[in-house]
Image 1 (spheres, rainbow, N blue to C red):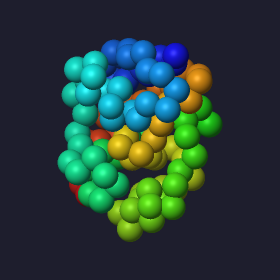
Image 2: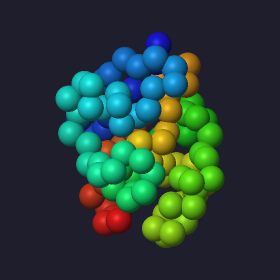
Image 3: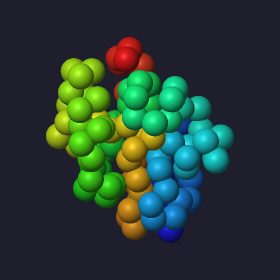
Image 4: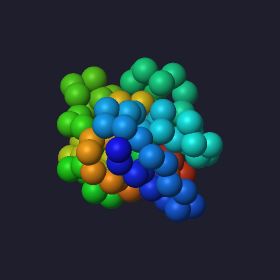
Length: 101
């Protein structure tokens, strides 16, 4: 199990390896912006402060982030695609206020 810390509130959620960040947020009452939940809209963009601790980015996610003009180097991810691994991870949801998909 890993702990996902959501900034700026500091709320924490426990998640099993393989859990999507979006699912961890919703199960724990974290206010997160999202739309389709299927890598089609980009609404659930988040900032990951320790990117190596989450699943690698897939081609669909990379393509959508590119189309939205967002970074594809790993610090910006889609919560509907990004999965928790074994380590704790910190997610900055204030990033969602900086762009409009």
